[in-house]
Length: 203
Image 1 (cartoon, rainbow, N blue to C red):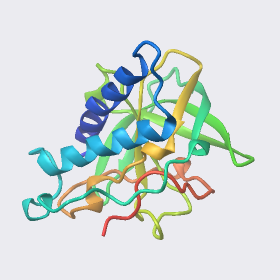
Image 2 (image 1 turned 90 degrees about the vertical axis):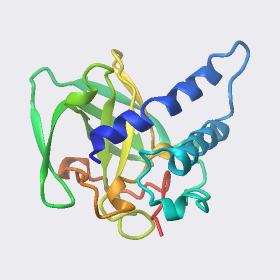
Image 3 (image 1 turned 90 degrees about the horizontal axis):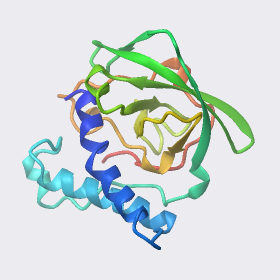
């Protein structure tokens, strides 16, 4: 399964549920609770969906992934600079192949006193719903997190800002099985800080 399928899985029901709760009159879930809801939805998908990358032998006893504790300091508001040209990015996959994405824009933000800029991508399969794909690497890769980097799905926006919540970062499917082909974060999306948020290594 490629990241294009992953985008559709995690970019739909999970986000919809969190938004539904947040829009209830007089109801605003605490930050930690929205993250927990997100993780519970992923657990349900991994245990029960036919699209789950986990082998059937693991599903029945699977109790969820290992995560960093929710930390609001890793939820940032970034300025968004859209790319007017249709620039394509060939991304190398873990099995030596390539997947083509379109560069949508640049997200610039400050984290722990440092300025960062990440490239937001769009897959052809996500063009209709506007989902944005953010593969990134950081200083935790190969230690507390998967060595090949992690992913984020972001909501399409026409504003000049976009929210990036690293607490929702997840592993590509190739972290669970070598049978999957997953794009590796490009050099321009390698952060020089430790993102101690989101999903940890899969054991």
